[in-house]
Length: 305
Image (cartoon, rainbow, N blue to C red; front, top):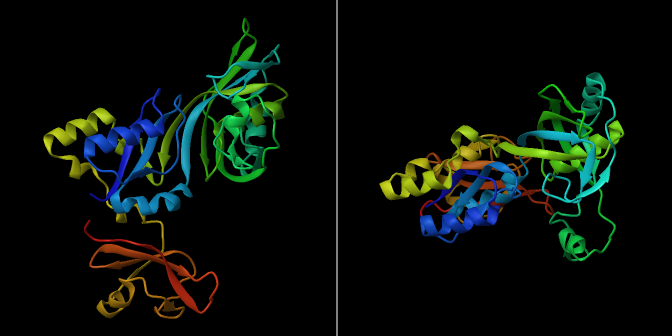
């Protein structure tokens, strides 16, 4: 079994829980995913099967889409609704909508983020959440992330009794973005403690909610013998990459991962490029990082496992 399976992860489950369940349902060990979803977040978890696991790192670099809610008025230790309240700045009067939109627009493009303490980012060999749980402080790294779009999608709701203000948002972002940190940083720009009060991942790796199956649906498909119909091909995940169709003689050189001259193909390979033969992706080649006159394989795919 090889390919990709978009799963709709429900709230309350970890991404590891999903992989564990799928290993039992599909009776296979070689399963991975392209980006962790927190237990309180639901949405699309792209699972890679068999040879498809060779795409995990490549697909993690792709765009992701989320919808969620931001609440001004207080922050939490985890930067989302599940954490303990740590700071309060009451919203005494509703924040102006134009100001909200302006500050959200300012956060589009390449921005710096400091990962939350409750995250798996490693510092000195330890994950940040390990420092957080032991009450230790450590300097967190500053990371650059790409925010393609960050827009408000609902009218802000002001809660006078709780002195908070909440609105929905939609964000399209690149690898490594912490959306809850985006919510906290936006709050700071507006002058308030804040947190991400809800989050759903709509799409990742080119797959969206409409294509995703729940674990219950996967189980039903396994029992009915139709699970192979639900598995997306490796090729379907590579449509955004440049591609070359190999001749028979070229395939003979490529199939065992041979290094190739940089001008081996009629068009120059300047970035990771998918090599197809007889309709199947056989390899991904890229310029050699140390030998500019050569091309080397980035990934090799086996047709049958």
